[in-house]
Image (cartoon, rainbow, N blue to C red; front, side, top):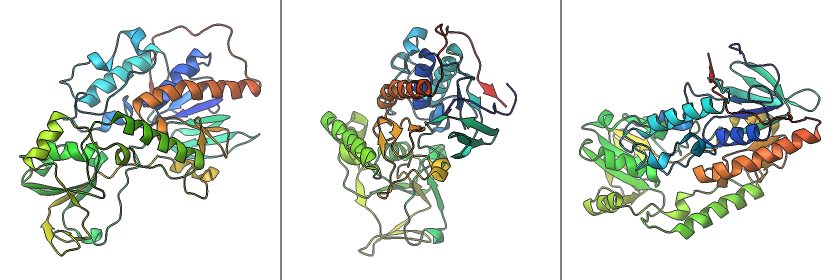
Amino acid sequence: MSENVPAEAPVVVVGAGQAGLSVAFHLRRLGLVPGEDFLILDRGPGTGGAWQFRWESLRLGTAHRVSDLPGMNEMGLSFATADQARAARDVVAEYYERYERHFALQVVRPAIVQAVVEGTDGGLTVETSRGSIQSRILVNASGTWAAPFRPYYPGAEDFRGVQLTTPEYRAAADFAGKRVVVVGGGTSAVGFLLELEGIAASTVWVTRRPVEFADRPEAGITAVANQDAAAREGLPLPSIVGGTGLPATPANLAGVERGVLVARPMFSRIEADGVRWADGTMEPADAIIWATGFRADLAHLAPLDLREHGGGIRVEKGKVTRDPRIYLAGYGPQASTIGANRAGRSVAVQVVDALRHGGWQAPSTVLPVASGASVSA
């Protein structure tokens, strides 16, 4: 395949992370040929989805659970038995690379999808950094890593220190001897605080709502159900952590006991040398880390006008209600690694059904597992 992408592909999958690879696996099992009937575009320079960009100190044992991709057991691989001492980003990148080759998925990277617009004959034009593609169906699995959410607070532009979001964090050593304010009530914020302990001169944790460390599996079910309801209604997706709380692991509870994981309420403004609360108290700071979550990376779909009046996109079982040519994999309740795997088959079945109604015929033979390579520049 040349440096430019093919001019046509019946199905385009955007993203080769957990959700995109899960959809691709099932499309292949249902008879579609990678690189011909469907094309996977990935913006990253290498395999691993968003994991390839995570900080070096993050380990599988301390990160969110990484579920195996469908079919990984056929390869004798599992994240449950992976080396927990290695950086999570390295393990995931290696396993995903082997997975792509084993199933000959022919991922094209790096390929940045810049816009999806109306094409010809009722199709879509996918404009990318590698050329334009005419397609009939688009499966968006671009995740959230490229769209961190940073709320506005008065005075942010006057701060003389460093401000960065979760994707920009690299290592605790970058903050040696600095006074750091960590903003956000999720697991990334907790991880940063524990890692910075003893390296930064001081850390202060601030959150928008009170923090609870508790193991409540039923709360996770409710939080996912709330996201599903919001997606069905076309509303902005609520926070998962806001509904579940933080895990009550021994490390987290010990951090609470030491006073490292004790959150303060949000400050009212940012000043040149720190942050100030409504009561007038001031916290000097050299750095602010905004671990304030993410939004779905959907800017390239804006030309299709998919959003509802409520501000979100109405999605039913992965299909966008406003435009049945568009599927969102790994969106909302599917964003967890388990949810992404389960949704992958559902989306793939719907895609193949739509193609068949449009006249596409599956090959008469099932594709064999073969050794293939990702397509890179």
